[in-house]
Length: 311
Image (cartoon, rainbow, N blue to C red; front, side, top):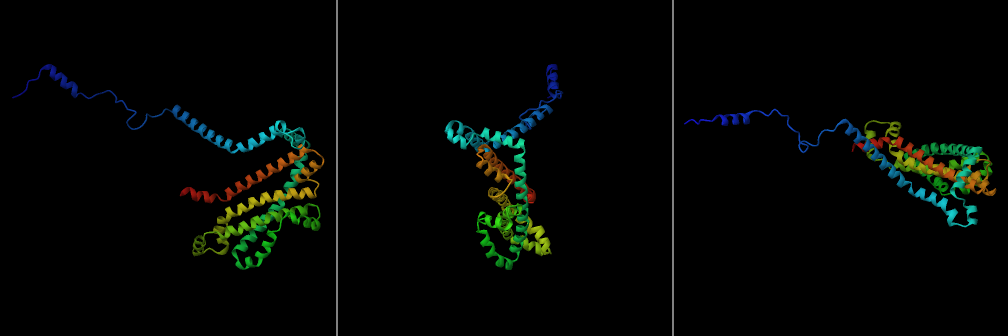
């Protein structure tokens, strides 16, 4: 039996079957968040950059906190914590900086710094070249190691400053004695670390290189030297510090120019702020030399970073 629909029921069913023409509303809960406008994306990038800079600034501030506290104590201590007699021999920081500015304006600090740098760079370069070459040979040839090791141990355990009078008597008080003692002080740290760096190379790398048909020269170039670079640069950094310290001591004994001469001459002339300005210059010079050597080490060891980043 057929069912008869009224006109109202027919219209209702037609409306229900008619497709909805209105655009669907995209919910933020489905398929992730709503797309960002270009302005929102730009603001987010700026915020990320500012957050990264703030993080770096915070780390740099924390790393420099001890130095800042030391400088603050140097400024406040002689003024408020020490007596007037102590202030004569330990002036506050601002007086030392003022004396350093006067030395720069007169050109004295530049002359002394240039003299010390020329001696230090000459002796340091001689020590690095000779120590690296000899260290590679000693580490590679066992018969050379057994021959030279006792003699090297004897000189290595002799204090460098103890030989300063010997160098002065033999070479005079000129540039030769100072360059020689700097080279002597920087030689042994580089030599010992070069030997240790070559001996700690992975034997599997050497065997693999030999199995590929590399000759001795290519083996040194491609395997030995790259693997030993970090250890060698550790010795070079130690040698850089030793060369500066020994040079300052040598210039205090007999010289007419140099940072060591500036320090001892200011002390004898009772120019105490100038003396501290020279000491502060030596500290900054040592810091800059260390930073330079660290950057060179990263440059020559960049292959290690590339290998580590892929793991």
